[in-house]
Length: 127
Image: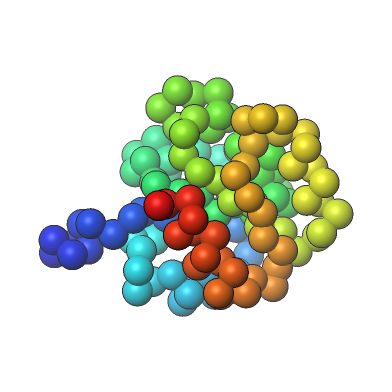
């Protein structure tokens, strides 16, 4: 990895659908270092190892839903400050964000993801 890549922000994409992972990677690959997790349990493992600068987190996953992952992140002082953006195809699921209380995600995006909206939101939270 060269110096320019070392300085790129790290983003963890968590989604159980491979097509979504590929789409998000395609949008983000030029400006960010990308890691993937196919579910919530693996996401927590990756976060412990890599400490991403931001997490794109699907809400509905089979092993551990995004809300539970977000709660685990917020309960750990080492990961509590990592911005989390929920992504979901189900607009009604976005109402579940309220279940996270004040320690939940910083924002949410509805699928299908608009590349411009996604990049704007990421840049907003990474400063």
